[in-house]
Image (tube, rainbow, N blue to C red; front, side):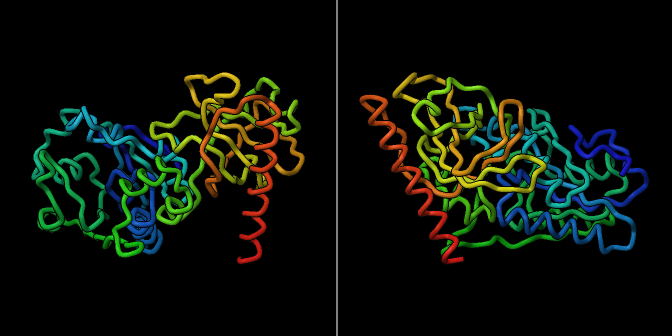
Length: 320
């Protein structure tokens, strides 16, 4: 495809004469409900017979930073991670539209006509059934359907997906991450929560304790609960996952640093080292981070953490 895979604005985007099937939403976390909307756009682009493009229009920062700056929603996914993930799902064009005060003041009646004017190839839009837009969130599905008819566009809405009788939502997932309920968060996401980054050199303390670690300097907008987790690690491009145990936090026993760090001890030997890219899948929360009286107490606890993580993966394997 000659078009850029990710762009910062829909203004001036040339689709090369191709029809665009566009999913619209914040899509923070790209959870199961979001995936239903996005998958519909991908399917239409592939099966429409018009050599159409599948696209996602999302926003950064979160609208709450403009309309409710004192209580903004912290994001599960940073823009670059979201874009990469959307492409992995099969989306061809990702538009990361900046959400500013001018966009916040756009009247609901002007949003879709303005989008069609900026993107003449727009053929259909895909949203969740609770999608709202425009100043004061006045626009909803009825207005979208009405205007789409006038503009010759198709509108497709996906119903909300529930888990345990409650709607899946980014808000619900954020709460689970903050509380360390990683397995519940993963169930709502439809995939394992993950971190991506480059391995950095550490102080070597883990190796001295008998548990060498890979260090990942990773500081998301919405940090999960500090603590110890069972994880799977992928060396980017290798396709091979390795189980391990990770600590995410400020290492209070040694430094109590202000910037949290993710330290991973793998169960098997690895060729991963400083400068390598890796992806860490968070599977289960084992315990909160805590300070230990000395290195021997920490060593004993890390040994116990490793045994607990090994049991977690063994139990998962035995139960399928």
